[in-house]
Image 1 (cartoon, each protein chain N blue to C red):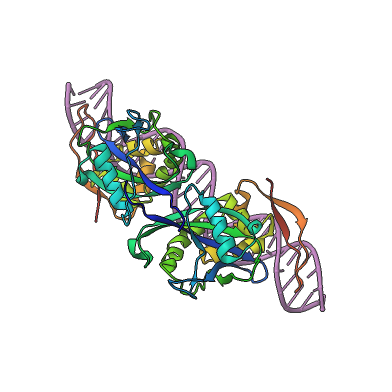
Image 2 (cartoon, each protein chain N blue to C red):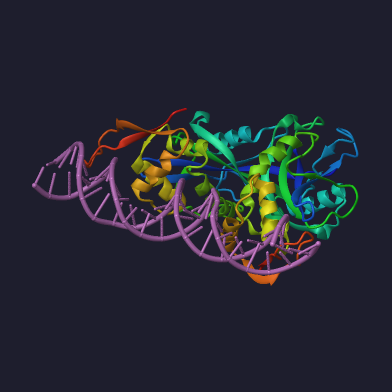
Length: 209
Length: 209
DNA sequence: ATAATAGTGTCTTTAAGACAGTATCGA
DNA sequence: TCGATACTGTCTTAAAGACACTATTAT
């Protein structure tokens, strides 16, 4: 029998903050060596027979301290196999994404996706490599998009999320047409609450499912 | 220490047969239980510290009997974590793709991609789930496309590959414009050898790298 | 010449991008 | 009313799709 590589699961947890109008990445200082005290993606070793989905929840609750029901969706990104990525020995890292709807707990540090601080292990590289994959999922991967934006949102919020993920802000009218083509997404005639600074109250988009 | 899941690597090996004008999937009858004698994707257990690229080559040479230098490119597809996928116990399967340029050895069975026979384990599902990912790589992932088509090819061959992967055959003129936009691909003014049945000799496309 | 295959030019459709102009709120 | 925000309609550009037509070969 071949001696097997350990498999770790590292999670890119995203949360859209409606007040800050930006998408944030959840990281946490490491409790143990190596890299004790340094910020890192939440990650755990995959147990025997454990599903990736379970390990994702375990990482997000255990390492970030989020409540399990704040995780709205999860999925795969890519696998990193550089043998020297962990000083303790060769491990495979499966990068996954998760979306959270509110910042429960007090361990997590939330960093704007466009200002991610240096991270432990090869996590900088994981984030850098996965960013285009995440940007590509927006408006194409429905669970991801719905997980990030929530059940109801306005065009302005959709613009904020798009800007955080892709780095550029589309014209509202054009994004509206893109959203019209997203299956399961519906432009309602409901008005959201008016904004603090005044201005026309925006219409609400909803998922039909 | 948590007991770790075993990691296997299963490879979708693709080869374009210019005579048969179609893309073929490389599979082989299993030598041992479980599923002895049944066709399966070439797969191996990932060794400790082994790179995915090495394991891919090991699977393709060991299980399909191909010479190592027939593999023209490799890459990742997705991870399958169903715990009951292997009757011997829970294993994670990382699905990878590889392209081969000729059918060396005598173990491999080459099945047309549109007529894949039933396979062992959950390999039917792996192939089914990965087919859209493969179709998406064509003309977008340059190493994949070049690995499949080879250094030089004609428009007719590009049409054949596209049809095998996507299930529908574009108009030659339109595919030509798509190829004009592929970085590193060049429309030459060289003519390929005339065809057996007559007809105008086609022009040759080449990779500049 | 004819069958067979390859390549070119153009029209149509769809999606993305860019704006000007209009609408609706709070103060 | 004015500043601030939201929505609508239209023009432009780029890509994909669909063909009619022309070109070059073997027989």
